[in-house]
Structure formats: structure tokens, C-alpha cells
Image (cartoon, rainbow, N blue to C red; front, top):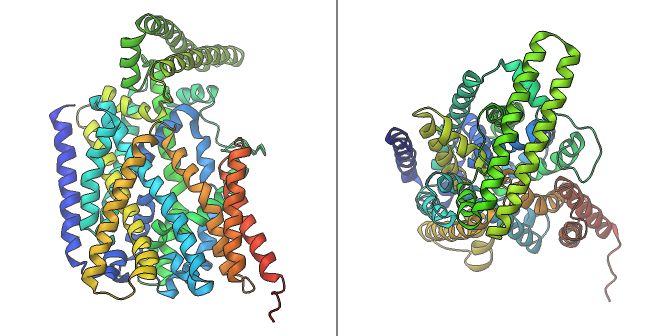
Amino acid sequence: MHWVNWLIVVVYLVFVVGDGLRRARGAKDIEAYFLANRSLPWWAVGLSVMATQLSAITLIGTTGQGATDGLKFVQFYFGLPIAMVILGVTIVPFLHGAKVYTAYEYLERRFDARTRTLTSLLFLVSRGMSAGVIISAPAVVLSAIFGWSLTWCVVLIGAPTVLYTVIGGVQAVTWADVKQMFVIVGAVLAMLYVLVTRMPVPLDDAFAIAGAAGRMQVFDFSFDLTNPYTFWSGIIGGTFLMLSYFGTDQSQVQRYLTAKSVDEARSSLLMSAYWKIPLQAMILLLGVLVFLYYTFQPTPLYFNPTHDQAMRASAPATYDSLEARYTIVTRARADAALAAVAARQSGDAAATTAALDAYRAQESEAGIVRTAALAAVGKVTNAQTRDVNYVIPRFVLDHLPLGFAGIFLAAVLAAAMSSIAAELNSLSTATVVDFYQRHYKREGSDAHFLAVSKWATAIWGVFACIVATYAATLGSLIEVVNRFGSFFYGSILGVFILAMIPRARAPGAFVGLIAGMTTVGLISWQVPSIAFLWHNVTGAVTVVTVGLLLSLAPAPKTT
């Protein structure tokens, strides 16, 4: 990579880390360290809420998802506005008014200590794994750039980020998030500009080609429980997921607990309700444009350089055969796409239909060759071979003009550091408040608890780095992180729903939580074809049903 790109990366990271350390000086106790003394303005909190989600996973996983699957992933977020309105009148006033450090602290006041402990433990497991996925995203970029091992890249990203997070507090994290939002949006807009100006055909014709390849479909109204991205899974399953994520996940709850008031906390969440779907659609569109760019340009057989090297070294004859076949079919695909554009511009509807059909056939043939190539490298490496997470890094390095690659990489690394910091800060909060203070040492000095908080942050950072070494091979990172969360989120949401039902009792909440997790686990094991978004609905409904049945049952008589 050119030194100019490196200079952009270094300057930005020095600025972000330096500003974070400067703001960390005021954190002298755990309220300042974890909640910034509940003094942050709503707009900063709102940007932090959005930035925590717009991690490096968004720039890599979501754009890669757009390139391979198109716009249909945006349906995943259709439940977000509904969830934000519901949270604004339910959980947000409860938690902010309770003056708690963690969402799970409230559950002990409402039910008992064991319900609080189990719920917090489930959060720690799910969020600890998700933090690993977030670290793996920039590690994928560095691995693609330099050909280094993924493990080494995880260490390179994780170590300085953990150090920064240990020193900083939530105030440093929040203001880093604010800067991160502008950098990410700026990088996306810059890449959109490059792609639009370099498209060899008019944009409306290009989108017609993308539509023929199935990349422009947004809505799928089929009620198919095995399809993760439909209108109904987004509206129903997505609403449950967003309710749990924004309403009960400490990484998000901690953001709005730093707001000055309940009204400002509500306003911070509504910012996501207004802007999240358009922003995600824009990022997916970036992936679609990358797909279109490669439609008219030579396309790599393997986007992952490691796969390319492994095939060249271990199976050169197979590699040469596949590459020759792929070159022929992608050239034919490009010719078919240009023929379709010419037919559209001629105004001949019949010719256009025939040309688009011919393009679809060539696109299908290219997909068959790519599938065969991935299967071949899978036999060589004995590892999963989906390379969706390498599509955008490869495009950035091979095709963006000088300086743009540095902007993109700076955005990825800054987003990763900020999001990881937010995750680790929330993991440390739950560990210290829900476990260390609650079960081990109730009384102690501010200096003692602050030191314990920093040690907890470091330990979770190491755990996340271990998870990260495996996460990048599991498929689209944006899917992986939501699969992890969906296994736990519905059941956790169910407990908080019970907490707002006056008749619900502690035994029902605890047993209901166990029943919810057990049900989701059995479905995941026995019926793996059920899309992960429906796990959120299943977990929440099971917890509430079991919890209410046990709460309404007459208590056993004592003698």
C-alpha cells in the first residue's frame, strides 16, 4: 500500500487515540468510567448508539453482503423504528429512572439475585463472542492487504485496542464514536462517488443489470421460516431482536444511561429509528455497485489471497483449469451485460428481455464456476471457504485511487477500535457491577473498583481476540454477529417483559429464562433450517409464557 495511504491511517488513529486518552483523565471513579456521570448530550449519545453498530463489520460484512446477495438484507432492519418507539415508552424510563449501572441490576430489584445473575451471564457470553467478531473484521482487511496470518492480524488490532479501552472510559468511547460516524459516512460516500464515476455504462442501465442478477430486490413477502431475510422476519423477528438489543443489551443500554435525562435518552434512540435504515441501504448499495463494477471488469477467481496462494501451490493444474474457465465465462458475462445495455438504449423491449435473459445465464454460469473453485480450495485447506468478507478489501486495494484506500482503512480501523471499546466497556461494567460488587466485594474504595474494572476490560479483550481468530471463517460477519446475538436475545428480552408485568414473580422469571434458552437451543440443534431471526421471537414468547404460568399458579401451601 502506498505511503500516502499509510499516512492517512496513522494520522487519524493518532488523533483518535490521543483524544480518547485526553478525555479519560476525568474518570476517577466507576460512575465516571462507566456512565460519564450521566452528563452526555443526547446527540452525542445517539451518534454513539449508531456508531456502536456501524463497526468494521458494517464496512466489510454488510458491503460484502450487498455484493453477493443484494439489497434484501435491509429487511433485517424493518423492525427497528417499531422497537425504538416501544422502548421509548417502556424500558428506557424504567432503567434511566432506576439510576442503575447495568440493565440487569434492575432485575434484582424486580425479581431476585439469581435472575439478575443468570441474565447478566448470558449477556457476557453473547457479547464477549460478538466482540470477537468485531475484532475479526479489520483483521480480515489486514490479512487481505499483507497476506499475514489471521491470528497475527487479530493480535495487531486487538492489543492496542484493549490497551486504549483499559485506559479510557465511556466518555472517551462516546466522543470517539462521534468522530467515527463522520469518518465511516465520509468513506462510504467517497467510495460511492468513485464507483459511480467509473461505471462504464449509465447508472440506470447498470441497475437494470443488477436487477436481472437479483441484486435489487428489497422486499420478499413470502412467509418462509427458513429464509432469514423476508419482510415478515424483519418486521416480527427483527422487532424482537431490536427490542432486546437496544433495550436489554448492556452495550446499548449503557449508551443511553449516560444521557442527562429520560427525554434525552429517548431522543438518542429515535436518531437510530430515523437514520439506520437509509444508512444501511446506502452501505448495501455500495456492495451492489462493487458487484456491478466487477461485472464489467476482470473478476478475481478468489477474493481471499490466501485461497489463491493455496490453490496455486497445492493444486496448480486445477487452479489453471478453473481460472481459464472463469476468465472465459466472466468475459462472456461482461459482453452479455453490454449487449443488454445496448438493447435497453435501443428501446426494443423484446430484445432487452432476451438480452437480460442471456446475461442471467452467463451470471449463473459464473456462479457455478465460483462455487466449484471454492469447493476445490476447501479440499486443499480443509476450512470453510466463503470469501464474502474479502470482496470489499480486494476492491479497495486493487481499484481505488491514491488516498481512498487509506481513508477506507482508517475508517475500518477507527470503527473497529471504537466499537470494540464500547463492547469491552459494557462487558467490564456487567462483570464488576453484577458479579464482583454483588457477590464478592460490596464495599471498597473508588480506586479499587476502578482498578478491577480495568482488569476486567483486559481479560474480556483477550477472550474476544481468541474468538476473533475463528469468526472470520464462519461466513458473512454481519450475519455471524447477529446469529450469536439471536441465540440469547429473545430469552433476555422475555425476562424484561415479565419485569413490566405486575403479576410476574421471581421463580417464574428464573425458570422462564431457562426454558427460553433451552427451547432456542433445541430448535437450533434439531431444526437448524429455521432462520435465526425467529429465535428471538421463540425465546421471548417461551420465557413470558412459562414465567406467567408459574407466576399465576397458586403457591404451594406450607405447614
